[in-house]
Length: 407
Image (cartoon, rainbow, N blue to C red; front, side):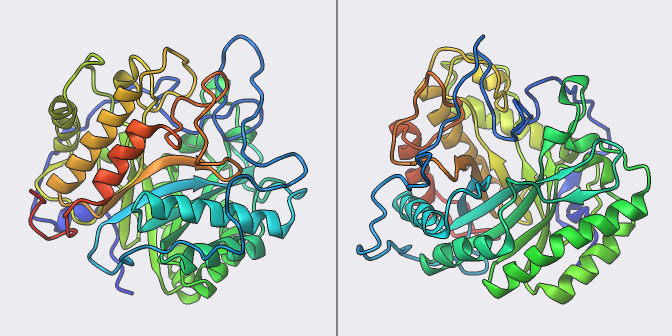
């Protein structure tokens, strides 16, 4: 595979803005903040909210994924050059759930994604470190083992879905209240950190290869580690194990502030651009807000950029902080649906590689309406207006990067 050290924008026919954009970091700007020992969002409502999940405590899978029913399959499998219309599936493993449960949940999600007209899925999963300065990277009890990951990827592959494997640093081991997050880690010995990181991802690269996974995200939102020359060796060795697309997913603030220099072939952006407008803003107003953010970096088509994460709470006031997992305001489905419609329009107008919506939790039943007393407002599965927006997006006539924008 041909590989170029990012920024990829330097080789695209776009105008790069040289000014650095100052973006404040405040609680809620960074999705996947730690709450109560989990990387999954937990809403703070003055009392401890129970964990949500479609699976029972006995490991029984939820939903109608009957093994005797033929599995759903995408109408048109993804091919190179087509847009990636996908969802981020976040999986915290539970050793009490047997393999049959895991496979049934994967089948449940595959059927649901096909019903949305998706052609892609990214499996995000946690790993841990010992703290902001730690040099140790390891699995936790919530990290799916490679063999269970392989079983899930096979089910998605059999459904015709393009698959991505995406390790994500769990912030449970960081001092989040003090302002630590995965984007500002500072290992005391970077050589040791990279050795440990490479040892951890190695088995997952082998799994991704064996299951014909299309992409492997070598890092996500590691702002403080971007540009380190040690990534060159990590990626080179990864490419001796794995023949697919080695990618990196940058946080939105790092993306707009300056070059994201990583030796990978593809860049994703976890895009939670705030747009300071009222809840009744039109879709076009939201599109304009996104375009204004993107123009801080470059104008014109962005065919090598994928929106690796996009989402927003179905609640009042969400446009101003789309990645806010913590605030719980009145439910407003129109806010979420209009945001999804706007993001999809931006992806097409900028001729991007696609979008992945954040997110669905592996143990949830996506066919069930969220319980708004406990569920994250960012949940979209089971919200009819948002699902309609997703289906419309994924069914559009946008042919992919380098093509004319869909009318």
